[in-house]
Image (cartoon, rainbow, N blue to C red):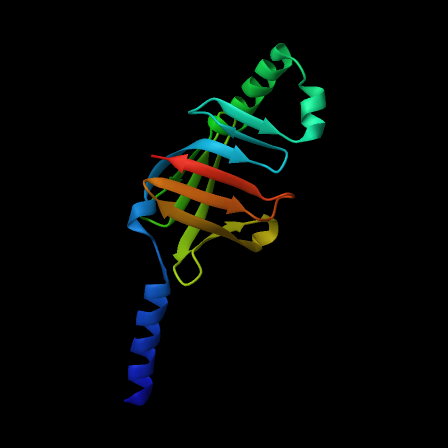
Length: 151
């Protein structure tokens, strides 16, 4: 009887800690990017760059080209969290599908992908949901990639 109670309790706890977050569900569009070298908000058309990039994109024509490049690289990408546990990144050039669960105990999205030779790769993405905005960090990039998204 004790073993049965323990198993039921364990399942309830794991279901509470690892689940899909209903507020996360749906398609999200990137509105701001911080990749450590620049920060850009597409809604306000604001941009700030580190000193190295400022030297490269030092006139208005170069800055326009840079904004076009960042738009294609980041702002045409959408992230879609589905209630079946699928996380889909839609880019103009490709579509990537992953499995995900939300770890409520440390506010991370745990993303898994099946790499070659059936090796599972697991990544944790810190995230916050506030005021209808989704903030996600991609900590395996150097420096961390930080995205702000809106439905």
